[in-house]
Amino acid sequence: MRRTSAEWVNGVDRLGVNAVDSALVTATAPGVGSPRADAPVPVSPLLTVVVLCFGGLVASLTQTMVIPIQGDLALLLHTSEANASWVITATLVAGAVVMPIAGRLGDMFGKQRVLVISAFLLLAGSAVCAMSSTLAPMLAGRLVQGLAMGFIPVGIALIREVTPPRLTSTAMAAMSATLGVGGAIGLPLAAWIAQDFDWHALFWTATALAALIVAAVALLVPHVKDAVGGRFDAAGAVGLAVGLVAVLVAVSKGNEWGWGHGRTLGLLALGVVALLVWATYELRVDDPLCDLRVTVRRPVLLTNLAAVAIGFGMMAQAIVVPRLLLSPAVTGYGLDQTLLETGLWMAPGGVVMMVFSPLSGRMIRVLGARITLIVGAVVIGLGYVVAIFLMDAAWQLMVATCIVSAGVGIGYAAMPFLILEAVPLTEAGSAVGINSLMRSIGTSVSSAGMAAILTAATFDLGGYQVPEESTFRVCFLAGALAAFLGAALAAAVPRRARSTVPTNA
Image 1 (cartoon, one colour):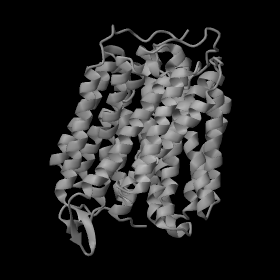
Image 2 (cartoon, helix red, strand yellow):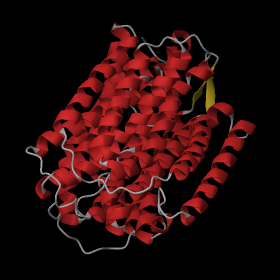
Image 3 (cartoon, helix red, strand yellow):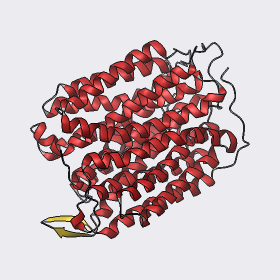
Image 4 (cartoon, rainbow, N blue to C red):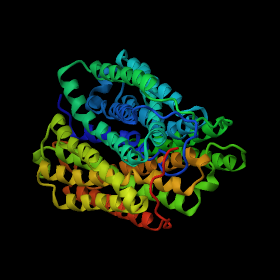
């Protein structure tokens, strides 16, 4: 099943890897506080880590597996192209909204319980999609799949509580890396399934994997006594959801609707007003979903701003590289790859993230989270500098993508460490949730920005407008500048006395 470059980039643009990237930094960091002393110690912490990593990988995989059929969704679901695009957008928005809420629920009621519920949501959503042949049930299933993304931040937070000190930082980095691996292998795997089997097999595969996760989490992940109780801020959750949905939908659809369209501007205005009202409410409520006073502390604020910049930088390669690979050779720069070949060229990036995750954990222990984040951001930027000069062959783009992925693998695990060093343990979940949202905003803006750059200068090719070659280099330059800005912001985070990861007792 051959896909055009426009179909690929539109799919990735709407997805934005936001669901993949939103979760990476929504974890609690080891070394900042510790679980209750009566928490049971699992017999095999490594087994728990394997189960959680597997869950994160599958959750991430479900976010990208629909891209290979994105160009055929309108026909498959008997609807319009505009309506079919919501199949991707719904999961993106739901995943972004659920992150801070799931983290708060995990703190209140226990992380293992929330993990089981999230895994079950993934199972239910995948099953609904597998049985769907029309738009409405497909959207419902994809929405529920997005809500299951709460598994990822809660799972990473639990790792701190169930692993010995020597394993904690490496385990957290490994789970963060599996998010990238899941997104990367999801593309070629889904392309293979879509080409050789009925498209429903994509979702039946996800259903089977989700069923394994439900059983594994229920039976193998320990129920640590980490519930702190409290009152859930339902009004705050609704207000945050309204604001985020409006802003993310406007950003995701801005290029499609037009940035000056009333619908885009109206949603942006609604989102901004809703978030301002939400912030005012959160400052006055006794038990807020997120304590915004903590968020404006210099270390937290700078880390969150760095998350926006680095998220923007990370996303550029997910938009630009596939389009270069898929573009026909007649453009003068296109590499004329099939969808499956494009996925295979992108897949090594996920493997690189996994390979570099132990290095990230070691760097955090030895150099500290601040230096690790700076190094990761700089490596991301250098990857884009390399890409500016290596656009002539698929293997060259693969090299550039692997460099960027190495930077992601090194730097992303450091963000929750920086956040948790600066906030009290009682605010950990909400603080890292906001950090996740900031990075999601960065990737969303990057998706829209890359699409805008690619359409700024075009030429006619057989009746279709395609980007000028120079626009791809501008995209890579923008990604590099964003990453280097993230490194500068991370460098401005106040230094702290470096300490080793304490025990979890």
